[in-house]
Image 1 (cartoon, helix red, strand yellow):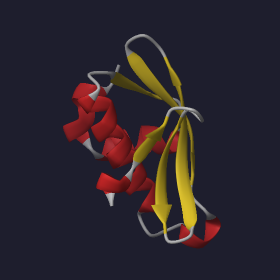
Image 2 (cartoon, one colour):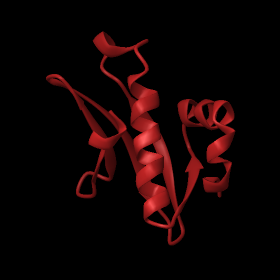
Image 3 (cartoon, helix red, strand yellow):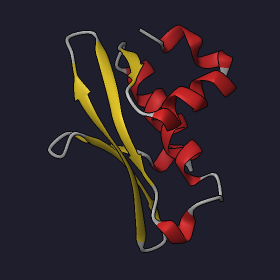
Length: 91
């Protein structure tokens, strides 16, 4: 699923379509980092790993763009703690 995560620059959020539903992670940009401020998964999709897929895809985009990430929401903090392989992205 991570390959289908997209950066909606107009809305400043990463998005992942899951059927007819949309999971997203809002962000703010700094010159060198992306601050992920809020992650939202539709209630019907919770508990299925959708938010993790969303953040994994977002981190791939951030890495590709040569930026760092700042965890501005609890879910991203937890995700990064569970995935030390992404520690190089943390600003």
